[in-house]
Amino acid sequence: MKITHLIAGMMLSLLTAVPAFAHHSAVMFDFQNTVITEGKVVEVRFANPHMHLVLEVTDAKGTRNIEFEGHSRNNMSRQGLTPNLFKVGDAIAIRIAPMRNGNDGGYVTAVRGPDGTEVGRVTAAD
Amino acid sequence: MKKISTAFASLAILSACQPAAQAPTAASEEAAVSASTIAEAMPTVPDFSGAWTTYRGAPAAAGAFSAPPGGPKLTAVAQAAVADYKSVTEGTDYSPGNACVGGGMPSSMLGSGGYPMEIIQRPDQLFVIYEAHSEMRRMFIDDKAQDPSQFFPERNGYSTAHWEGDRLIVDTVNLKTQVDSRYPHSAQATIHEEYYFDAPQPDGTPVLAADLTLTDPVWLEEPFTTTKRWQAMADYSVKSYECTEPKWLDDLIALYEAKGLTMVQE
Image (cartoon, rainbow over all chains, first blue to last red; front, side):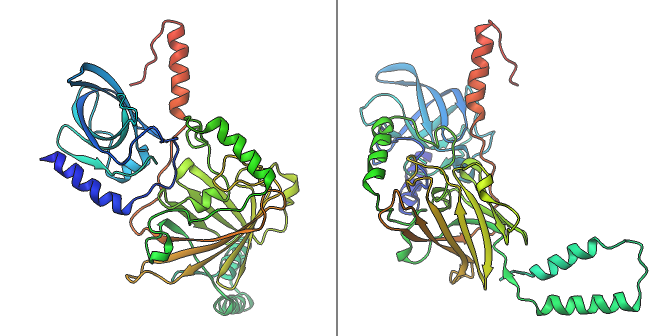
Protein backbone atom coordinates (compact mmCIF):
# COMPACT_ATOMS: atom_id res chain seq x y z
CA MET A 1 0.00 0.00 0.00
CA LYS A 2 1.40 3.32 -1.08
CA ILE A 3 0.66 5.14 2.15
CA THR A 4 2.97 2.72 3.93
CA HIS A 5 5.75 3.91 1.67
CA LEU A 6 4.98 7.49 2.52
CA ILE A 7 5.41 6.72 6.19
CA ALA A 8 8.52 4.58 5.71
CA GLY A 9 10.06 7.39 3.73
CA MET A 10 9.24 9.75 6.53
CA MET A 11 11.14 7.70 9.10
CA LEU A 12 14.25 7.68 6.93
CA SER A 13 14.03 11.33 6.08
CA LEU A 14 13.65 12.40 9.67
CA LEU A 15 17.03 10.91 10.41
CA THR A 16 18.89 12.70 7.69
CA ALA A 17 17.20 15.88 6.64
CA VAL A 18 17.00 19.17 8.43
CA PRO A 19 16.01 22.35 6.65
CA ALA A 20 18.50 25.01 5.80
CA PHE A 21 15.96 27.79 5.72
CA ALA A 22 12.71 28.29 7.48
CA HIS A 23 10.90 30.68 5.20
CA HIS A 24 7.74 30.33 7.16
CA SER A 25 7.19 31.01 10.81
CA ALA A 26 6.24 27.32 10.75
CA VAL A 27 5.16 27.35 14.38
CA MET A 28 1.57 26.78 13.34
CA PHE A 29 2.45 23.32 11.96
CA ASP A 30 3.01 20.24 14.07
CA PHE A 31 6.01 18.58 12.47
CA GLN A 32 5.98 15.80 15.07
CA ASN A 33 2.78 14.53 13.52
CA THR A 34 1.96 13.21 10.11
CA VAL A 35 -1.46 13.01 8.55
CA ILE A 36 -2.30 11.51 5.18
CA THR A 37 -5.05 13.42 3.41
CA GLU A 38 -6.73 12.42 0.16
CA GLY A 39 -8.64 14.73 -2.08
CA LYS A 40 -9.25 16.19 -5.51
CA VAL A 41 -6.92 18.91 -6.73
CA VAL A 42 -8.73 22.24 -7.03
CA GLU A 43 -5.70 24.47 -7.37
CA VAL A 44 -1.96 23.93 -7.35
CA ARG A 45 1.02 26.20 -7.60
CA PHE A 46 4.46 24.70 -7.27
CA ALA A 47 6.36 27.76 -6.16
CA ASN A 48 9.20 29.05 -4.03
CA PRO A 49 9.48 29.46 -1.17
CA HIS A 50 6.41 27.25 -0.67
CA MET A 51 4.02 25.13 -2.65
CA HIS A 52 0.36 26.20 -2.58
CA LEU A 53 -2.31 23.54 -2.91
CA VAL A 54 -6.09 23.46 -2.57
CA LEU A 55 -7.78 20.07 -2.27
CA GLU A 56 -11.43 19.17 -2.18
CA VAL A 57 -11.57 16.87 0.80
CA THR A 58 -14.43 14.75 2.07
CA ASP A 59 -14.34 13.43 5.61
CA ALA A 60 -16.50 13.24 8.72
CA LYS A 61 -16.82 17.02 8.71
CA GLY A 62 -18.21 17.01 5.20
CA THR A 63 -16.90 18.10 1.80
CA ARG A 64 -14.94 21.35 1.50
CA ASN A 65 -11.91 22.95 -0.09
CA ILE A 66 -8.84 23.00 2.13
CA GLU A 67 -5.79 25.14 1.55
CA PHE A 68 -2.29 23.77 2.15
CA GLU A 69 1.23 24.97 1.78
CA GLY A 70 4.33 22.86 1.56
CA HIS A 71 7.91 22.30 0.58
CA SER A 72 9.46 24.57 -2.01
CA ARG A 73 9.32 23.82 -5.71
CA ASN A 74 13.08 23.42 -5.76
CA ASN A 75 13.22 20.97 -2.89
CA MET A 76 10.29 18.97 -4.26
CA SER A 77 12.02 18.89 -7.64
CA ARG A 78 15.09 17.51 -5.95
CA GLN A 79 12.88 14.74 -4.56
CA GLY A 80 11.65 13.93 -8.05
CA LEU A 81 8.73 16.25 -8.63
CA THR A 82 7.97 16.90 -12.28
CA PRO A 83 5.35 19.28 -13.73
CA ASN A 84 3.22 16.31 -14.82
CA LEU A 85 2.90 14.52 -11.49
CA PHE A 86 -0.71 15.65 -11.18
CA LYS A 87 -3.09 18.27 -12.48
CA VAL A 88 -6.25 20.03 -11.40
CA GLY A 89 -9.06 17.49 -11.06
CA ASP A 90 -6.81 14.54 -10.17
CA ALA A 91 -7.33 12.51 -7.00
CA ILE A 92 -4.12 12.58 -4.98
CA ALA A 93 -2.83 11.89 -1.48
CA ILE A 94 -0.65 14.25 0.52
CA ARG A 95 1.30 13.84 3.69
CA ILE A 96 1.10 16.87 5.92
CA ALA A 97 2.27 18.27 9.19
CA PRO A 98 -1.16 19.25 10.52
CA MET A 99 -2.14 22.54 12.09
CA ARG A 100 -1.37 22.68 15.79
CA ASN A 101 -4.75 24.26 16.52
CA GLY A 102 -6.63 21.44 14.79
CA ASN A 103 -7.95 23.60 11.98
CA ASP A 104 -8.06 22.44 8.38
CA GLY A 105 -4.82 22.75 6.45
CA GLY A 106 -1.20 21.86 7.02
CA TYR A 107 2.27 21.77 5.57
CA VAL A 108 2.73 19.34 2.68
CA THR A 109 5.88 17.26 2.89
CA ALA A 110 5.06 14.60 0.29
CA VAL A 111 2.58 13.98 -2.47
CA ARG A 112 1.33 10.88 -4.30
CA GLY A 113 0.11 11.42 -7.81
CA PRO A 114 -2.78 9.57 -9.49
CA ASP A 115 -0.37 7.04 -11.02
CA GLY A 116 1.04 6.16 -7.59
CA THR A 117 4.28 8.13 -7.94
CA GLU A 118 5.36 9.56 -4.62
CA VAL A 119 7.75 12.44 -4.07
CA GLY A 120 8.76 14.36 -1.00
CA ARG A 121 10.44 14.02 2.31
CA VAL A 122 9.41 14.88 5.82
CA THR A 123 11.30 17.71 7.38
CA ALA A 124 10.29 20.89 9.03
CA ALA A 125 9.34 23.80 6.80
CA ASP A 126 12.05 24.68 4.35
CA MET B 1 42.14 17.68 -7.30
CA LYS B 2 41.58 20.03 -10.22
CA LYS B 3 44.02 22.87 -10.61
CA ILE B 4 43.90 25.97 -12.74
CA SER B 5 47.05 27.76 -13.65
CA THR B 6 46.29 31.46 -13.32
CA ALA B 7 49.56 32.23 -15.05
CA PHE B 8 48.56 30.11 -18.02
CA ALA B 9 45.15 31.75 -18.21
CA SER B 10 46.71 35.21 -18.18
CA LEU B 11 49.12 34.27 -20.94
CA ALA B 12 46.29 32.92 -23.05
CA ILE B 13 44.49 36.24 -22.72
CA LEU B 14 47.64 38.13 -23.64
CA SER B 15 48.35 35.99 -26.67
CA ALA B 16 44.76 36.45 -27.85
CA CYS B 17 45.52 40.17 -28.06
CA GLN B 18 48.43 39.69 -30.42
CA PRO B 19 47.96 40.57 -34.11
CA ALA B 20 46.39 37.51 -35.69
CA ALA B 21 48.23 37.58 -39.01
CA GLN B 22 51.68 37.67 -37.54
CA ALA B 23 53.91 35.10 -39.23
CA PRO B 24 55.71 32.77 -36.87
CA THR B 25 59.33 33.70 -36.37
CA ALA B 26 62.14 32.07 -34.52
CA ALA B 27 61.72 34.68 -31.81
CA SER B 28 57.99 34.08 -31.38
CA GLU B 29 58.51 30.30 -31.29
CA GLU B 30 61.13 30.82 -28.63
CA ALA B 31 58.70 33.04 -26.70
CA ALA B 32 56.03 30.34 -26.94
CA VAL B 33 58.40 27.77 -25.51
CA SER B 34 59.41 30.00 -22.64
CA ALA B 35 55.75 30.88 -21.98
CA SER B 36 54.79 27.25 -21.56
CA THR B 37 57.83 26.74 -19.35
CA ILE B 38 56.72 29.67 -17.20
CA ALA B 39 53.19 28.29 -17.05
CA GLU B 40 54.50 24.98 -15.76
CA ALA B 41 56.74 26.67 -13.25
CA MET B 42 54.15 29.10 -11.88
CA PRO B 43 52.20 28.02 -8.83
CA THR B 44 48.69 26.76 -9.53
CA VAL B 45 45.62 27.38 -7.42
CA PRO B 46 42.77 25.03 -6.48
CA ASP B 47 39.65 25.04 -8.61
CA PHE B 48 36.55 25.28 -6.42
CA SER B 49 34.17 25.21 -9.40
CA GLY B 50 31.19 22.90 -9.12
CA ALA B 51 28.00 22.27 -7.17
CA TRP B 52 28.30 21.89 -3.41
CA THR B 53 25.81 20.49 -0.94
CA THR B 54 25.60 20.01 2.80
CA TYR B 55 28.59 18.25 4.26
CA ARG B 56 27.56 14.94 5.76
CA GLY B 57 30.70 13.78 7.46
CA ALA B 58 32.10 13.43 10.89
CA PRO B 59 29.70 13.77 13.87
CA ALA B 60 31.43 17.01 14.80
CA ALA B 61 30.04 18.50 11.61
CA ALA B 62 26.68 19.25 13.25
CA GLY B 63 24.80 16.36 11.63
CA ALA B 64 22.79 17.42 8.65
CA PHE B 65 22.31 20.99 9.71
CA SER B 66 23.39 23.27 6.93
CA ALA B 67 24.58 26.08 9.14
CA PRO B 68 27.18 25.34 11.78
CA PRO B 69 25.84 25.66 15.33
CA GLY B 70 26.32 28.78 17.37
CA GLY B 71 25.85 32.42 16.73
CA PRO B 72 27.29 35.83 17.43
CA LYS B 73 27.28 37.42 20.89
CA LEU B 74 25.24 40.59 20.44
CA THR B 75 25.76 43.91 22.16
CA ALA B 76 22.87 45.56 24.01
CA VAL B 77 22.21 47.82 21.03
CA ALA B 78 21.95 44.82 18.73
CA GLN B 79 19.80 42.85 21.16
CA ALA B 80 17.32 45.70 21.34
CA ALA B 81 17.18 45.98 17.54
CA VAL B 82 16.67 42.24 17.13
CA ALA B 83 14.03 42.17 19.88
CA ASP B 84 12.06 44.83 18.03
CA TYR B 85 12.35 42.88 14.78
CA LYS B 86 11.10 39.72 16.46
CA SER B 87 8.26 41.57 18.15
CA VAL B 88 6.85 42.59 14.78
CA THR B 89 7.50 39.37 12.83
CA GLU B 90 7.34 36.42 15.21
CA GLY B 91 4.35 34.20 14.60
CA THR B 92 3.66 35.87 11.27
CA ASP B 93 4.42 34.88 7.69
CA TYR B 94 6.79 37.82 7.35
CA SER B 95 10.38 36.80 6.67
CA PRO B 96 12.95 37.70 4.05
CA GLY B 97 12.53 34.28 2.43
CA ASN B 98 8.76 34.59 2.21
CA ALA B 99 9.33 37.94 0.52
CA CYS B 100 11.79 36.24 -1.88
CA VAL B 101 14.65 38.24 -0.37
CA GLY B 102 17.97 36.52 0.17
CA GLY B 103 19.58 36.09 3.55
CA GLY B 104 22.61 38.26 2.82
CA MET B 105 26.06 37.60 4.21
CA PRO B 106 26.99 35.70 6.25
CA SER B 107 23.63 33.90 6.24
CA SER B 108 23.68 33.22 2.49
CA MET B 109 26.99 31.40 2.80
CA LEU B 110 26.51 29.71 6.18
CA GLY B 111 23.00 28.52 5.31
CA SER B 112 23.82 27.09 1.90
CA GLY B 113 23.90 23.35 1.36
CA GLY B 114 20.36 22.00 1.70
CA TYR B 115 19.76 24.36 -1.16
CA PRO B 116 23.12 23.81 -2.82
CA MET B 117 25.57 26.40 -4.02
CA GLU B 118 27.49 26.53 -7.25
CA ILE B 119 30.92 28.02 -7.72
CA ILE B 120 32.16 29.21 -11.07
CA GLN B 121 35.80 30.12 -10.93
CA ARG B 122 37.68 32.41 -13.26
CA PRO B 123 41.17 33.74 -12.69
CA ASP B 124 39.79 37.18 -11.86
CA GLN B 125 36.46 36.30 -10.20
CA LEU B 126 34.83 33.63 -8.16
CA PHE B 127 31.06 33.54 -8.68
CA VAL B 128 29.06 31.87 -5.95
CA ILE B 129 25.44 31.13 -6.74
CA TYR B 130 23.35 30.11 -3.76
CA GLU B 131 20.32 28.25 -5.06
CA ALA B 132 18.03 29.60 -2.35
CA HIS B 133 16.75 32.98 -3.47
CA SER B 134 19.16 32.84 -6.43
CA GLU B 135 21.59 34.89 -4.39
CA MET B 136 24.86 35.52 -6.14
CA ARG B 137 28.16 36.75 -4.83
CA ARG B 138 31.09 37.91 -6.87
CA MET B 139 34.48 37.70 -5.26
CA PHE B 140 36.84 39.92 -7.19
CA ILE B 141 40.24 38.28 -7.16
CA ASP B 142 43.26 40.54 -6.88
CA ASP B 143 40.91 43.45 -7.44
CA LYS B 144 42.84 46.69 -7.28
CA ALA B 145 40.88 48.89 -9.61
CA GLN B 146 37.61 49.31 -7.71
CA ASP B 147 36.94 51.39 -4.64
CA PRO B 148 34.15 49.79 -2.59
CA SER B 149 33.26 53.11 -0.99
CA GLN B 150 31.86 54.15 -4.37
CA PHE B 151 29.26 51.37 -4.30
CA PHE B 152 25.99 51.24 -2.44
CA PRO B 153 25.83 48.72 0.40
CA GLU B 154 24.05 45.44 -0.25
CA ARG B 155 22.99 42.45 1.81
CA ASN B 156 25.87 40.42 0.42
CA GLY B 157 28.30 43.33 0.53
CA TYR B 158 31.30 43.72 -1.73
CA SER B 159 33.92 40.99 -1.71
CA THR B 160 37.53 41.04 -2.80
CA ALA B 161 39.79 38.00 -2.74
CA HIS B 162 43.36 36.85 -3.17
CA TRP B 163 45.20 33.57 -3.04
CA GLU B 164 47.53 32.64 -0.24
CA GLY B 165 48.91 29.26 -1.24
CA ASP B 166 45.94 26.91 -1.66
CA ARG B 167 43.58 29.21 0.24
CA LEU B 168 41.33 31.85 -1.24
CA ILE B 169 41.16 34.74 1.21
CA VAL B 170 37.96 36.76 0.88
CA ASP B 171 37.15 40.04 2.59
CA THR B 172 33.69 41.56 2.50
CA VAL B 173 32.67 45.14 3.23
CA ASN B 174 29.71 47.35 2.23
CA LEU B 175 27.23 45.30 4.18
CA LYS B 176 23.86 46.62 5.28
CA THR B 177 22.51 46.68 8.80
CA GLN B 178 20.43 43.52 9.10
CA VAL B 179 18.05 42.80 11.93
CA ASP B 180 16.45 40.08 9.79
CA SER B 181 19.48 37.82 9.64
CA ARG B 182 20.31 34.71 11.60
CA TYR B 183 23.58 36.59 12.12
CA PRO B 184 22.45 40.13 12.90
CA HIS B 185 25.02 42.83 12.19
CA SER B 186 25.39 46.53 11.64
CA ALA B 187 26.57 48.25 8.48
CA GLN B 188 30.00 48.47 10.14
CA ALA B 189 30.40 44.72 9.96
CA THR B 190 33.15 43.11 7.91
CA ILE B 191 33.57 39.45 7.03
CA HIS B 192 36.76 37.52 6.51
CA GLU B 193 36.58 34.11 4.81
CA GLU B 194 39.23 31.57 3.89
CA TYR B 195 38.25 28.85 1.41
CA TYR B 196 40.25 25.64 1.10
CA PHE B 197 39.88 21.97 0.26
CA ASP B 198 39.50 19.90 3.41
CA ALA B 199 40.17 16.16 3.66
CA PRO B 200 37.89 14.39 1.16
CA GLN B 201 35.23 11.91 2.19
CA PRO B 202 36.38 8.27 2.42
CA ASP B 203 34.91 7.64 -1.04
CA GLY B 204 36.97 10.47 -2.47
CA THR B 205 34.18 13.07 -2.62
CA PRO B 206 35.85 16.48 -2.38
CA VAL B 207 35.11 18.58 0.69
CA LEU B 208 35.25 22.36 0.56
CA ALA B 209 35.67 24.30 3.79
CA ALA B 210 35.61 27.94 4.74
CA ASP B 211 36.65 29.60 7.97
CA LEU B 212 34.56 32.69 8.55
CA THR B 213 34.96 35.59 10.93
CA LEU B 214 32.28 38.24 11.31
CA THR B 215 33.57 41.38 12.98
CA ASP B 216 31.31 44.21 14.03
CA PRO B 217 32.42 46.98 16.42
CA VAL B 218 28.83 48.10 16.99
CA TRP B 219 26.67 44.99 17.19
CA LEU B 220 29.03 42.21 18.29
CA GLU B 221 30.69 41.85 21.68
CA GLU B 222 33.46 39.93 19.98
CA PRO B 223 34.20 38.59 16.50
CA PHE B 224 32.10 35.56 15.57
CA THR B 225 34.11 32.73 14.06
CA THR B 226 32.89 29.49 12.56
CA THR B 227 33.82 26.89 9.96
CA LYS B 228 31.48 25.77 7.22
CA ARG B 229 31.89 22.64 5.10
CA TRP B 230 30.28 21.41 1.91
CA GLN B 231 30.74 18.30 -0.16
CA ALA B 232 30.73 18.03 -3.93
CA MET B 233 27.59 17.00 -5.81
CA ALA B 234 28.92 14.95 -8.67
CA ASP B 235 25.72 14.55 -10.64
CA TYR B 236 23.81 17.70 -9.91
CA SER B 237 23.76 21.29 -10.99
CA VAL B 238 22.12 24.10 -9.09
CA LYS B 239 18.54 24.92 -10.09
CA SER B 240 17.06 28.30 -10.79
CA TYR B 241 14.93 29.62 -7.94
CA GLU B 242 11.79 31.28 -9.21
CA CYS B 243 10.14 33.08 -6.32
CA THR B 244 8.82 36.49 -7.30
CA GLU B 245 6.54 35.50 -10.17
CA PRO B 246 3.56 34.25 -8.12
CA LYS B 247 3.25 37.62 -6.36
CA TRP B 248 3.36 39.40 -9.71
CA LEU B 249 0.78 37.04 -11.21
CA ASP B 250 -1.53 37.55 -8.24
CA ASP B 251 -1.28 41.31 -8.73
CA LEU B 252 -1.81 41.02 -12.46
CA ILE B 253 -4.78 38.69 -12.18
CA ALA B 254 -6.34 41.13 -9.69
CA LEU B 255 -5.91 43.95 -12.25
CA TYR B 256 -7.66 41.84 -14.89
CA GLU B 257 -10.46 40.92 -12.52
CA ALA B 258 -10.97 44.56 -11.55
CA LYS B 259 -11.77 45.21 -15.21
CA GLY B 260 -13.94 42.12 -15.53
CA LEU B 261 -11.35 40.42 -17.73
CA THR B 262 -9.72 37.01 -17.58
CA MET B 263 -6.01 36.74 -18.23
CA VAL B 264 -4.85 34.12 -20.73
CA GLN B 265 -2.46 31.85 -18.87
CA GLU B 266 -2.21 28.68 -20.96
